[in-house]
Image (cartoon, rainbow, N blue to C red; front, side):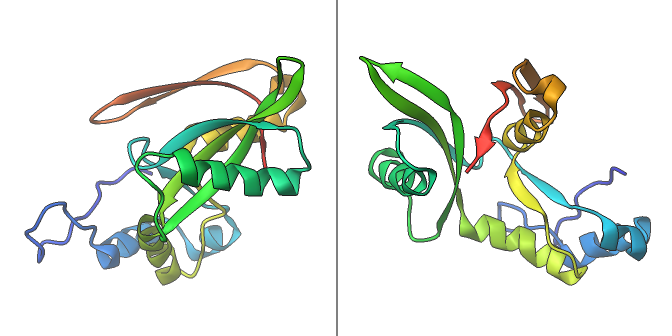
Length: 175
């Protein structure tokens, strides 16, 4: 189903705000409650919204890798992550640099206020998203779990109203 986003007509300031009550009404009038209750819901973060950073880190246990990636992101990301930043860490692969084995890690940062807006919408319908992520990250990680796609390069083309985003990936793991 596709339907237009409903904006709050009582707010004249830009950027426009979504009329959550009306959007919820559209969702529940088009999708039966029993289907909603059994569905896994995912939200695509617009590609211009998150900050994405790739870090090369020495090989270490996965728990330590996540902490090291967050420290590296806080040091080097522009703009600087703030107290309301949330992160997703994705292992892209291993490589060797000057005989030193390293992990290549993708770090995605989003502001919690954006996530809270999305969650408030789903709270009203009694469901919560299974995943909130940039489309290229979520689809790639799902395909990596399927043997026939695991080591193939896959292109995702997201043709939007204001821009077109092309992501080329090969299966990777979310930490």
